[in-house]
Length: 349
Image (cartoon, rainbow, N blue to C red; front, side, top):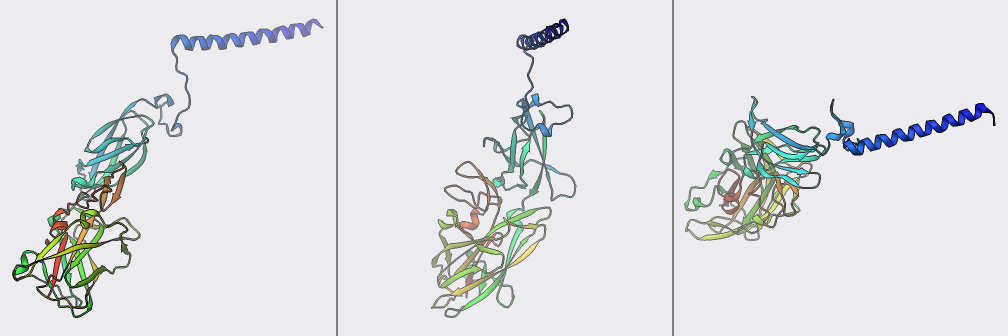
């Protein structure tokens, strides 16, 4: 072997030994000093300027700010929230909260709890917490006060029905027309949001009847019968009285929901007409025999179901299926639908 080759080989061996020694020294230094080994983590592509992937997993405080969109000036409000992390934990569980603990790199979904009947909150989904003190700004909507809604009912000639003035007015809102044997007629029902700087999200229209009324149905395009008839309505037993103070029973029967949307929004002063068809049975429908029909408007919002998941609907997804625990409370209307706010009762004369 030539002396030049020997020198080259010796040099390569010394170089390998030097590199190995440096690596050993580096690893030993890490072990001794506790120096962090940086491993790429989730969300690295979304890092903020100056942020390192080693921040992921650190404790974080998520700050929640909501502003009422129904007011022209910026108005901060304080709704109740559900905040759900990527593991399904409710780190805020239907409570008012300005902040909550989490971790950097976590993903959360934020809903408003509409049970408090104060604010609808537009949900914000799949929010990644990229700093130790992130802030999420949400859009809230002041829910109309129950007594600020109104219902007016018109007969088939678009003449407004008159208020019931006879002895049964304690349980009846409007006096309707006589219906002959198996006679059917359309009525129109106008619902109005009569409150400034408020919003109403109509999620369902429900109807009921009794006596010699054969059926009542919503005949609006873009609406369909709900696949679920909530237990709160199904369990309700309604009572009306005639002029002689005799009691008659009736029941809620069906609910209708929008086909292509979760709900219909009514901003301040908004109103809309809804057509319903009413049919008498083979004996006809007239006064003092409990021939009545009822209509109820139910709003839509987010609530936690029996399985712990958050659902948007016009009723709560639990064993009781309450419509009154979503947004505006319809409890009074469910039990005694004589209000002209969210429900109304008509006797056919």
